[in-house]
Image 1: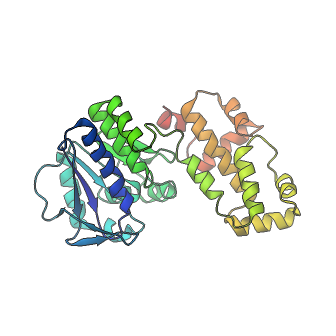
Image 2: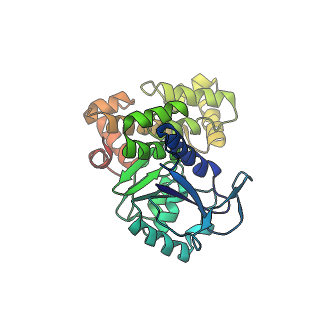
Image 3: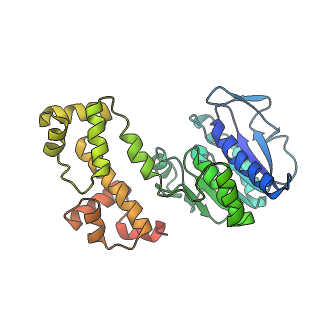
Length: 317
């Protein structure tokens, strides 16, 4: 079957290469070289310069491509603004979406599909750092902020960069079963099903933003001890600073207040638990450090934009 990956100038190279290698390895494991034939379709001819500077040769362009496509994926890029307004590309994508067996995006490629109207009314994923922007810009899409990848009908969307490999592996499993997908995962040294969601990366990546080791240590402590006293006085004491100095330096180093960081970390953990368990709200609150369930409910709604009940209705497994 033919897998087409749409690429354009400043494309994230791994958004193309990652899924391509998963499909190629699946074909190798099957002993059928033509089981997956990956083709790179560009928005222009010639060599495309990726965001890393490495150049990528395209097999065809949206104007010259001929023949049926089974699976169409749109790669992402740090600079999507040059692509999302391309009316001709939107028309091509809409036309392809009606004939392909499945289509989707990797990382910020979701913005291209959204601008073409192909995410309206759909559950979707994108890079954790872009979920809020996607939800705001395209309110008809139901953005799942913690998902590694999402399938909604024939639409598949994934989180950032390496999650494109998780997405491609899910497609292989759908096509040929768990045993083949497991062999591919083992060969490529990756999880068949990655544990947890994006928040395990977003919270911990946020914890790496501080340049001061004392601030990083405090952030690591927060993420590892959500049930502890994480008030400013307690955290300032751990950092060996006055409360005023600690609060000022923490915000300067991380771009957020200690209280906001703590709340984000707790709600990140809470939404994972909400997806993976049926713990009642009071127990859920206690697991992530909230003594008061009403305060937990308010924080959950404030951070995620939906109530706990609604979040579970949409996103629980």
